[in-house]
Length: 153
Image (tube, rainbow, N blue to C red):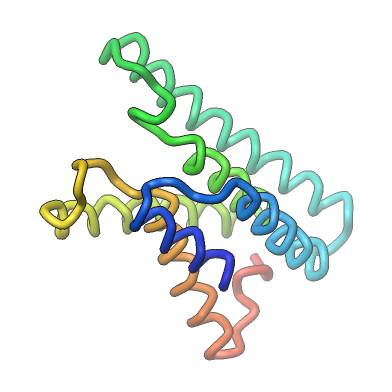
């Protein structure tokens, strides 16, 4: 949660995050996933499927931005930190949980941005930061109620 908090804080304050935090987050989440996964093969398959989904989402966002909106993609529509955060999340959870968390985090980020739009300096969404807050809340509730539901689906 410290790593997620660091990502959120830096994204809100500086709109950039230290690069080492994303691999650290991926290692921590990936380790937790491997620890509780049914087997290494199943866990590796889930990680690969999740990464494929992230690649698909980023590719669609790239195509939409580049060809339909005719704008620059990286650091205009989606930041490198956001993409790295997606990847860190992808290795951390079983595929069904990842789909729910990824979608939930994106919706949470959009709703918070709409509600607090005036407070964001440059009018862009600190996506990695908001998704980090969402994961802190989800992991906190999971730990508080001692429910291992994040890894049982």
